[in-house]
Length: 334
Length: 289
Image (tube, rainbow over all chains, first blue to last red; front, side):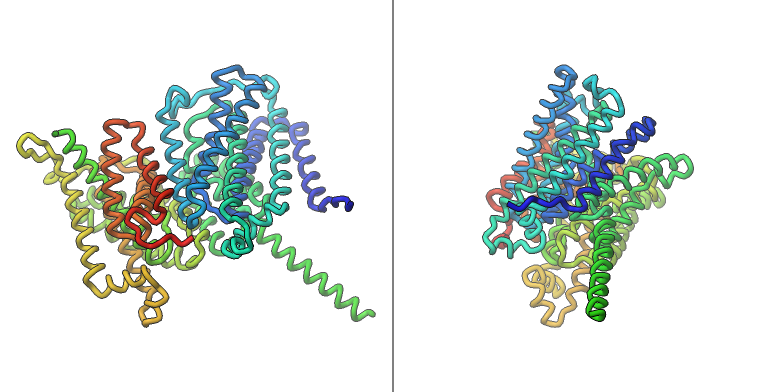
């Protein structure tokens, strides 16, 4: 049996993770850790979005509902019972179950049709969840939201940080493994040419539904972590803005790469943080969405692969050229 | 009886406003194969620019003209700058139009201020009409009238004029129309502008109806319009009228009897249609996978 070789990039990623894991021991600043945690969480969320958009070519406009389902499952479970690790795990499992059911139903209904339908249905479904969360006050406390207790172990900021980082790392490697597996190859084939994949004998709809479900589950985990760091939940987790954030992060960071969404998340979260601070200087900074919306539109037209995709392409070209030159010089030398 | 009639009028009025949004969406989709997620943004822009003109001039008709002009202009810019580069690529179209939606509704906050704005109907449409012992609100009747008028005019143009013939032929087979020497791009642009103007008209009519306008209203109504487009059949103009009335009525009655379920009912309708007739209740085309 051939031993599976580790990819070079794996070492680079592990190196990055180790560096990130050191941060709380170097700088214990609360706001800094909080910002990085938000980046991790939205990185997870954007990765789940990218599995749909970048790898399978499905556009979802209701991704916030999985995020919200995760957030409320964890919050309600811990609020109505005790704030222990066991109920946290129970809440997360409930989140995963609900998210997979919702994404399965949404997928079954619309993924056999043209791409518009999935986008429309998920947009409307997310709207439904938002209304439901606002109306079902006995459980969700409406738009006022409620504060939750979290398990004692997680009260420490550094522990919480490490938890978020390890979940991100786990999901990142898991999703990377998935996209490189035969299943992932079929998903990419669907993105590239759906009819051809179908005629090669793959049940395209099944694969799309699988992608939809996995993406929903990962997004709900991100939502669960989000309430843990905030210790508060309200209906804004279901808002369209959450979906739009994921879209911006994925598109600007780079679709079809798992690192791209994380970088996109970092960019958007940092910009959000900074530009909101600047709003004291001039009110235009409060409307930072205009800037990012414009960048997003330009990115869709001119850099459909985003930052990471475009860079990778450039580097790849250069590497190829260098290889060619090296071969040529070898030929001349011999 | 009084209540039922009032609910029906209310539902019809809402239905007509949704129809004005959905009609543009469905025609643009049928002809250009583009689903414009920014359509709700045009709706909101129509509302805000109309109310602005109304506040300045005090004339309701000028407000409507202002909104329509805004719609035409925004439609022209959108088609030229945003839609044109991404023809034929569905995923990119969906993404870019949603991005535009984002920018449009933020721009409203920059241009008109971030707060909600109040809007009132003009004096001659204020108050209610009393027929026997039934009280009907004048403005709602006016909206219904305008809705049917727009439907009638558009239907006439589609069925009885040369440009309508071209549009209908384009919905059926745009390559064929193009090969007959017709500049289909020009037709695309006109239809897109007309659709945007209809959305903007819907917006300005909407403002005194709900009494208050805000930047996010575009997306809210766009969701209803999408439901209508799915139920009525993508690209089917008359279908969107019936579906809009259906959605408007169910919205009004549900909001009164089961307020919690009003959006859920429309979603359920859409889900049922998607399962059993994905081409829409009035769609004739067998859905292409």
